[in-house]
Length: 242
Image (tube, rainbow, N blue to C red; front, side, top):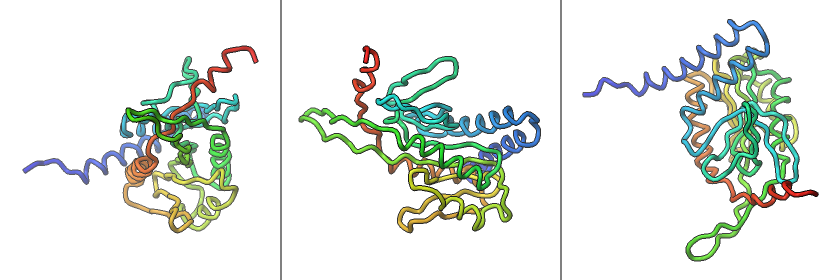
């Protein structure tokens, strides 16, 4: 009989993430360095445990019209079919068509940071996305509609008391749909997710939030399917004089 324990493995993964986020929050004095460390924890988690068809990076997103998003702490994008637009000395720009999800990373959840994350998410969703017909042995499939881009917020703590009560739900429901946060984690307390069938956010408290969030994200990505076939020629036109 095996001595492995799935329960302990998953609990250990959450415990590691929570400890690292807690260390970043309490042991690092400089606000910028504190934020960078927390961001790094989330990127490391996603890079290790998401399927390899996805990549997670801090990046800007650009569309074929030359419009850019704000800098996004965590961009989850396709690496199987989509090219980088730019990658130099840690600066990454990815095409809007390749994006599956975007997250803002903060030390603690608050109304201010929920609104800030909504603005970041909106800066990506408002970008234009191309889609080409897909060739196959018998002809071509019609161009695939762009997928819905998930948006969210990742934190260690919450400024609210209780941490995941009505105030955070009120903040999540505020603002335009283009900035809606679909999924997020407050690693010390729980995670939230938008229930499409019921049309509102749900809170899942306790347990092992970091691991539970990760599995919920993977599940949502599975139902997203594959990003559309990018029209790279729409980007190539910027290589010639306008």
